[in-house]
Length: 272
Image 1: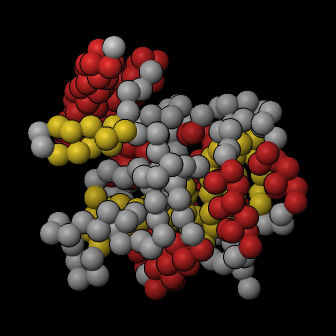
Image 2 (image 1 turned 135 degrees about the vertical axis):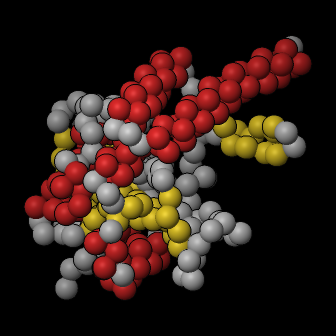
């Protein structure tokens, strides 16, 4: 009997850790939908040939996250899946993670009546507003770790392909609000690791440690354009709560990018 939750991943120059996770996933009997934004690399394509259960898609070039995630979700829906959990290629997970998410879905299928997605992570938000099951509603959620209810995504028009990388997840959240759908969060997921494979470094700010990285100027420009588009869309659609949150997040993003560059400059100067 096949699993009721499919697994979706968009890859770009996949590393060995991701390949190992893909093998674990198909060995556990899960159907995997992969969109390859770097088909010339060949590693994922060859893996898909060797392992039954991997559904491989590509456009022959890097067409971005929005197109990729829309493709894997839509293909899973065509194959009669009602739910898909999506992971970034640098998010760690185990068979225990997948089983936990699927059991969560099987026990709460009625959530699809009100929610477009449920975000899974291991933050364990102790002290934050939650219901009796330790779950809570959120305004914004990232793609990685999200369990998508595919019929609701279809009604929303899938993900917005006009966003290349930055903004794809938040635009989905805005579209969900427009369609009167909620997004939930479960923050006690076993085996979930969204930290280890990130290219972040530790920076101290106001007595606390944060994992940050200096992005390229091109990435900053892309993020800025996406953020301004999102803020404009939220204002035009009357989603004032979203616009306030997005302005705050964009401001924090710019401040942290300035901060890490200043810190890196002084670190280099100190080591000279």
